[in-house]
Each structure stands twice: as structure tokens, then as C-alpha cells.
Image 1 (cartoon, helix red, strand yellow):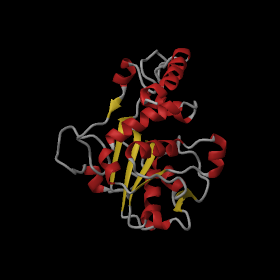
Image 2 (cartoon, one colour):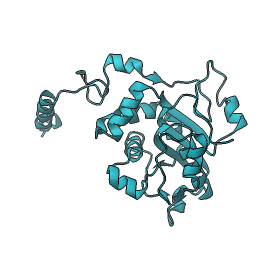
Image 3 (tube, helix red, strand yellow):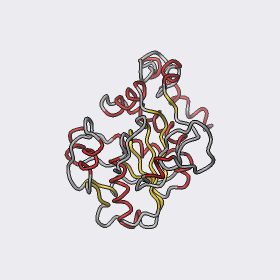
Length: 253
């Protein structure tokens, strides 16, 4: 049977679903043409992070300083990871997307976030051997029932073809939520909190690892994860997040 004919029932079903459940903007709930998208007004309010950026911290430059240029902050206190990129600067619209995925059970928000991350981190994705999400402690995962970083890692794997693993990087202890903590408190909170699962060292040994999270604030969590991956023999650790909080404080003194 011709594939176009065989797909007719599926197309009819999708059309019926779209008719009964119209697509809405993930931020303001205005009707939109495509699922997992934003209206024009909300899209325009996102602060997209495009080149040129610091190659190590992913923070924006005012002008192009050349490929692999580093900011003064990166030179003064280089992080444990090698390169970082983010899709947007964290603002109200970006926060609503993150919260839709994290707290409102809107996986379609994660689809859009992952597409934007794939664009911002296309070079990091193309050069990675494996994608690893920042893990939740099992108790917090049980409370939330969902690890948004793992969902983003899975979507990035699907669109790039780079394998991802959820069982390699783990939290060895439960930590306080980072919200409301200052830079020093965040650093102490996650110090030595992560490790590569026993028996999984070969996944990262000598490999280029892409670490994925939804938001980078001070970088303390990513720093702790990167140190654990380095200790397990990772050759390179890059960091890709959806949002970057403006002027994040470095996790170094």
C-alpha cells in the first residue's frame, strides 16, 4: 500500500486532536499555529544568547573578539568544565518556560527548550561522545517524579544522534535546594555531592562529555559535576543549559 494512503488515518487522528486541543503559547496561553511553541510576542521577549560569547563561560561579548575568545572572568577563575553555552538569558519569559517543564507537567516546553539548546550548543553536541544530565537525588526524584535535565538530555540525544545516559552521574547525598542560597552557600551545598556510578567509569573515561541542565545560576552545581567527571577520567566536559542567569558569580573565590 502507498505510504501516503497508509498514513491517512494517522493524519486524520492528529487533525482531530489538534481541533479538540488547540495549540497554545507555552508562556501566555495565546493560540498558536504549531504545538510546543510561543506566540510572536513572547518569543520576542526571550533574550536569545547568540555568538559572540566567551568560549568557556558562554557569557555574551559586546563585540566579536575572535573564535575561542575568553572573558576576563574566565581567565581569572577558569571553571572545571571546558566550554559552556546557553540558549537564553534568564528572564521572566525564560522562567515561565522552565517552570512549565519543571513544575506544571508541560513536556512540550521541554521540546522547545531542547530545540533552542541544540541550536545554541550545536558545536558542543557534534563533538560530544555522550550526553549526561545533572542528576537528582533519588528522594527528590521520587517527590517530583521527573528530572527536567534528563528530559532535556533525552531530547538533545534524539535530535543530534549523540547517546545519552541517565545512570552514569549520580548524587551521593541529598542536598538542600539551591534557590535562595548565595554563592558560597551553593558551593558548600554541592561540594563532593556527585560521583560517577561505580562500574560506569568506562562511559566517561577518555570521552568528551556534554553535561546538560535547565538553568545555570552561579555554576556551583555544574562545577561539582564537572569535577566528578574529571575525577573519573573524562577528557573534556562541556556544559549546555537552556538559560543563563545574568552575570553569574563564579564558584571560585
